[in-house]
Length: 133
Image (cartoon, rainbow, N blue to C red):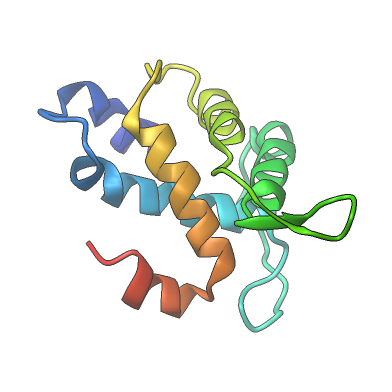
């Protein structure tokens, strides 16, 4: 449904900027979390809806989710700032939506930063304070 109803609209966007793509990016971020994380915020297991492609895209979703962190520890224990996982976001979107024309697009940039923010916050905080439209 996302591919048909949302990704198909990308070519018709009058302007590809953060404000234009953010609603779609937020939908993609929540969908990615649903795929990558096996439980909801209350630690209740999620039962995934049937999807023929879930087996193919789940590993990419899990890699993107795992790499969506602001910092990591270096070899000496120092805190290292990490850039948003742009390549992982592009790989996930490209594989999940093979017909979407991505190229160098703001969609990947915005998703990479928003998925980091989603991972760093609970869903309610993310919706109410971080991801305000």
